[in-house]
Length: 222
Image (cartoon, rainbow, N blue to C red):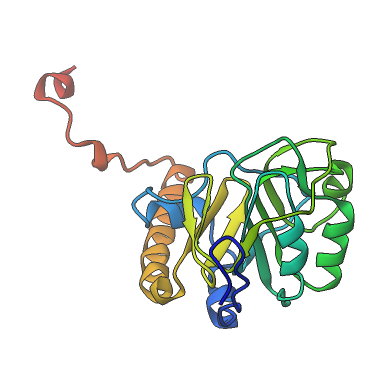
């Protein structure tokens, strides 16, 4: 049995396509609202040209500045997986770059979420391969380990478990347990309907501000 700090666990089953397709058009902000605005990243930014990120989490925990276990994770990555990397937020060395991005894209990997640094940002900026990271450095990584694959990780304050649904857009990154998908989607649909109605009302010159409560009597008289 591998010791803690050097574990390579099998990946969880892929998230069903029906779940991914249902959430693909949903804004991260709306998902966040319906998770009580408690979960999700705060500091990771998109570095790719365009494209929504959604897929099944394959997690990697690595020593800051070392990407040996990211390379090992490529042996487990499948089409539609998201490589989620806990690099402890370190910006001293880049954990992925253009070559790793192109290899993942050729494998139909869904994208990267890296709590650490990347490099070759011009290549990412010209690509539609989703990549969310904490920052950038030209300095490359070491490859000595240790690390772990498919273990719980912390990404910018967000806990990600192997097999979670990961979804990201311009507002940030969020994840959730696939077992919560149906209940969460129902809440999302309700909020989307409310927001659609609110936008329609604004377009018609109306605005529902009932949520702030009725104004005081003296204010109504003015």
